[in-house]
Image 1 (tube, one colour):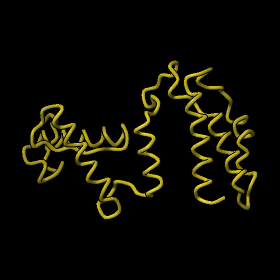
Image 2 (cartoon, rainbow, N blue to C red):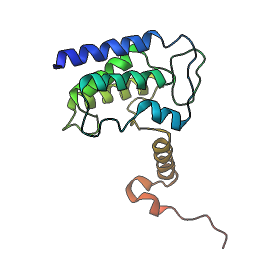
Image 3 (tube, rainbow, N blue to C red):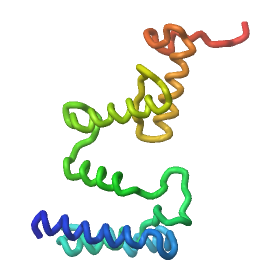
Length: 168
């Protein structure tokens, strides 16, 4: 298969998956042994052909949770909207991440724009912000910011400027 055929087949599978997101059950639960048997991840130790890869993709999508389903509720996932799907596809095709300006200048500029928009929404003029990858990293960043806020010169001296509040 050439690149265009691979992209077309992938798009066909994704369209079918999205079309069924709000129908039927949001998950056909299987325990890990049953799921491992269906996926048969060790079936192609020497590599797979495109038809085999797409067969596996169909199995993956069939066994996936329908996070766009109206009955699905989760604190971390709530379906994907079309702009986010396009963004994920463009990121995958461009093979970049927004971790540095050197490797992804466009993503970095877009990230800064989004941060500025969010700061404007909450009324923080000349504010600072950052994007983090998840609740754990966010919580750690929040703790560091709070420690820095507590110590008047914490930004410059770090957490070592804080004195423990222990009884003498």
